[in-house]
Image (cartoon, rainbow, N blue to C red; front, side, top):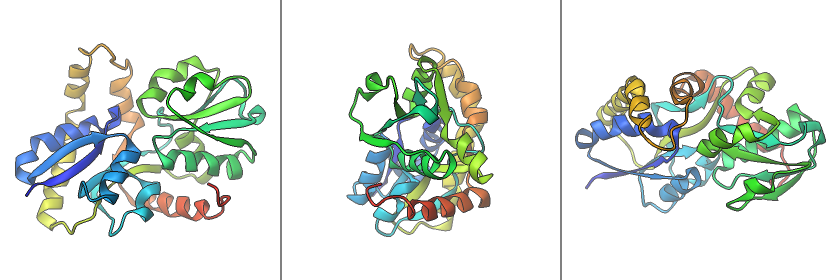
Length: 252
């Protein structure tokens, strides 16, 4: 029986998807793509055994174990995890929380409390909430929507960059997680697949240019904004992220 993999459906995951498709038979895997929070649900409900999971969801997944040398992270600015607003952050009174990833909304709350030292009223967001961002109401926007919409707002705060300014660390937004034990040979091949996908970024960009919704800065975004290597600094950031979550209000 093949191992089911749940991968994020965003632009930043296309190199991983490309590489895993090349190694699909060797790894004996079935790949499906979802929004980040759905990836986590797939593992929680045992519909998938490996997933690219928003790190905030890790405690909710039984027997979750981070695998692979690769992740979705950023060393400084990431361009696709943002607070956007019509006014400066110091004037924001309300904040919509993107429904697609709990990691990003928790990061936003951490930065508001400890970095910007700003209190706001948090608002649950539904699809289309981007149209409600106006006056002193800001919003957390992530993923491909953030890349498309950021030019529409006068004030854009990159959460990975703000985290780096606050902690002098990179950030890891999503990690490859398995709920099953995986062999060393499987993990080695999995890493090879991810590496092959990253090496193919120029070719992936060229293929995407033919699509109607092509993001003009794709090559720079995939090559320089997203940091795909999981390393000790990103794991330290993850540790500190979880420690700070404990200091947020219970409702967070």
